[in-house]
Image (cartoon, rainbow, N blue to C red; front, side):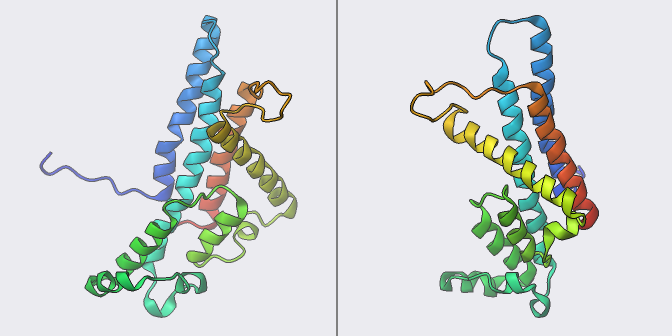
Length: 206
């Protein structure tokens, strides 16, 4: 539409859009459960876990995307300065008047297929943004940090179990049964991911 205003998004605003899928899966599950439909609706809970962890993954990718292009060449964080460039990219680099855009595009391309769900991968990504000791900064209290890292591992693993194994037990004598899941676990995942993002925004408000 002519004259329409294009929304200016941030990593947080995009996360808020993405997490809606998880919330709607939970709402649909609760509605169908009350109706006693007789079908296995636990797949909605599994979908919610996948949407939640994926929304967090996308959030960290966006944090990098919106940040790395803002550094001048003389003030690059050490990790960003070490990002390799192919000789074939030199012509593209030279053609950019705004080198920040070229840096952003280069980093985004190299990170496109990287998962940002585990604590180390996330911390490495934040180093590109000039943040060392990322988790210490977000969770200064060691107890809170350790609990958060433990939960991050649990939910990340479950997301991978669902996506890569259909959430079925893999032991030889398991009969490939589905792993059990309930509403409390799925809702806990969504609340956890949202809390992590809120803590990151408080510590790194860009």
